[in-house]
Length: 294
Image (tube, rainbow, N blue to C red; front, side, top):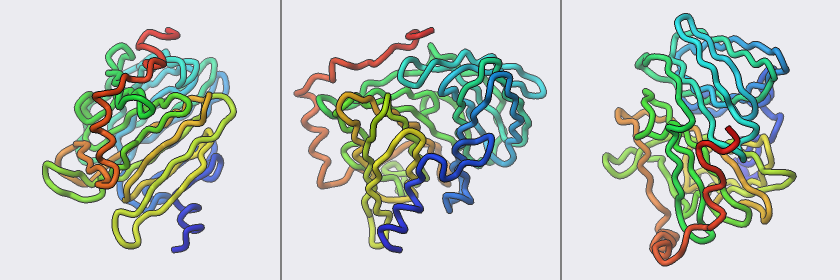
C-alpha cells in the first residue's frame, strides 16, 4: 500500500464517512477490524433517533447540547454541554442487544462510542461530577484527560473511551506509544479511533508510524470532524496549533480477556517521561473542572 493510499484509508476527513443522520460513521467494516466503532449523531431541534445496539455496547456522549435517552426500562436525561472545550459531560451506557431512542429538544451533536462485546451489562447513567479528570504529562507535553470510560473508571465489557484536551502549542499522545500486541501484563492489543475537533478555526497534526515492517504509516493534518484509525503502530504526537485547543475522543477495544489499557512507549522517545518531574504542569490546565458551564 502506498503512503497516499494509507493516508486515505486511515485519515478520514470530515464528511468522508457521513451517513445521515451521522456526520461520521465508522464501524468494523469501515475500519477493517473487529470491534471498535464511532458515530457522530447530529439532531435538529426536536430530532429523534433510534439506535439498535446489535452486537455492540455503546456510550452516548454529548459533544454539544443535551438529550434524553430512553430504553425499554430506563430514561436518562443528559444535560450535556455547550462544547467539548467548556465542560465535562454526563453520558449514558447502552448494552448490546437493546433498542434506544435518543431525542433532543434543542438539537445537538452526540458521539456514539461502541465496541462489539460478549457480555450484556445493564444500561446506566454516568454523572459528570464522577468523571475523573487527569492532568497528564508536564511542560509542553501537558494535557487534560477526561477518563469517563477508562478501563479502571467505568464498567464496560470491551469498550474503553476517554477525551483528551491539549492546550495550544502542546503535544499529547507523547511519547509515541503502541498497543498492537498481546503481551500479558505489558501490552494489550487494542484497535483505536481518534476523533478530532479544533477550537475555533484551526488545524492540528497527528502521527502514526510503523511498529513493524509494513505497519501503519500516517501523518495527518486534522481539522474538526476528522478521524484517524490506528489498527497498529506507534501513535503520537498529537499536536495542537498555537492559540487553539485540540480535542480528541479516543475509542478503543480489543480481543483480550482483560479489559485494560497497557501500552509500550517508543524506545527512542521514552526518555521524555523522565523530564516531567522537573517541570510544572501547564498552568492553563485544567481547562475546566467538572462543574464548569453547568
